[in-house]
Length: 476
Ligand SMILES: [Zn+2]
Image (cartoon, rainbow, N blue to C red):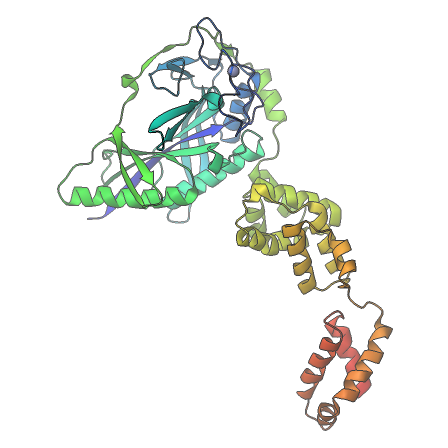
């Protein structure tokens, strides 16, 4: 039997606000445990939340960038559950009136045709604290620094049919969140987390199968592997006459397997009720238009501009706009050396090679636009050749050297004064009498050898074409 995989995604993203959603505590990642807390985010009785205006603005930006309708009358709700990472014993979220609804992100479908992945809703909520299980003392510690960090939950429709669609959607969503300044989307720090709901059904059937949910997958690779594993598990189970149980499963990326965590609770398992401490927020047409007008350039707009104004091929624009870090490096470097195609080539070639060789994430890019521009300008001006350019770039990337100083200190500059070539070539000719006479007798291949000796004598620092031209002049 042929099976179809059906998936939906719930993505949580931590917002790049300076302070938390309902208090003035810092949202900075990595502080000493329980130092970014106050009486509000630690849930002391008698305190009142005060909504951070930036959270609403970021939610609207995300909604506009994903073609959503913006809800004019917003309300918050309490999602009640008791867990040690949640000192108030409820999470302030939005159940009945989420701020954004009915959007989409375009991806490429299995047949290569464009396909829209629907966004059911986007809502604002607060993050919970972090539990740290200490095996050594057999105890669990809690860090409330993350308590009250603002989140957007972006809930898709069950429109995905392959892991490739899921990854493309996530890449596009991440680019949108980064480009709009809404989130840094560092998956390794948990600021972008994806839960995948997955079920399978015989191809052609319209009713959905029973789904499972995989929680907090924190890399694209883990997502891809978890999907492949879970689809296979469900299909095998059904083909053996078994049934899929609705449950939450945890993916163990080291072992490459998932296991059941708990049976899945539905919304009715939580006690939701309207949040009484926060007044409803009304969002006016003017506010939406003001935010629309101040939206930074989105990936698709940048792609178009790079093609139309800078003349870059579509392939280049897709790669450059896949990461905010590439865009920043590209735009700042172009401003310094005015040759977009050269900059694109160097980023897509050498820079990406260095990132991968040093296992550096693009957002931790150590290379400055000044250094990249200096290398490109020296190569373009013929001051150094391309091979030397690559060496210098690697030094700038790994050791932070100044490319111009490095070239001067290591005497790497090309010989630009062509009159300096002749005496060196005369020596080469004198030292290789045999090849020279062979060449003069009509064995043209001998020129290759003489050329090689000449470039060696010049330590590769002279333009090959000029050397060849001069040798012909001297020997022909
Ligand atoms: Zn606080």
